[in-house]
Length: 172
Image (cartoon, rainbow, N blue to C red; front, side, top):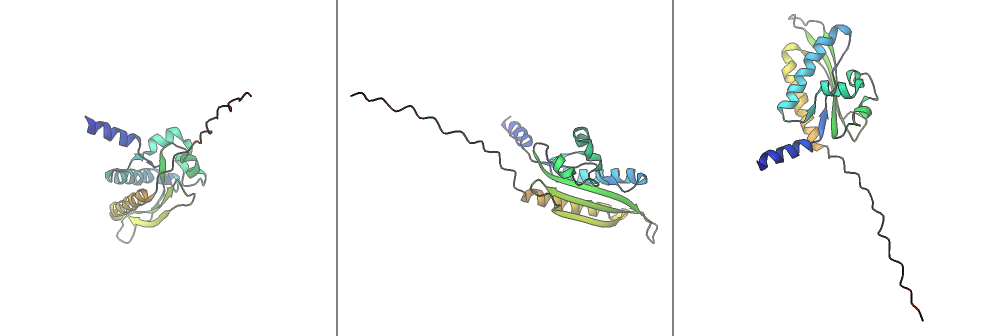
């Protein structure tokens, strides 16, 4: 019983990883962007990371559907309570290679709430056969970065000093 309560308290206090929708490079790349996004979401969850999925972020922040294109997106999404890290992605389908295998041009940027610039950027052309490896590397790197980011310090509200009682009146 106490173990369940502790797990619930830990989950409630977890610093979250925000994963907005991966942006397609063009209208024809939408389904592939969603496919890569789902793979990354599963990779992060498999490592036990507390991920806020794209569907939740989309309801809270409509801008999250175009995060890769909007430089204001990180600061807007980091207004979410408990946000610690943000992972933004962009996907473009690339031409088939010599073996006829289709691939992806993928960019993934990892942000910390403490910095407006990305901490890590992956920009790679990935064949379909290498997608699992790419997702594993991105997820593992995100996990390491997540562990290194110190949680934001709680706001300290200074209490005014207690008022002193008036000095005693001495009558002579």
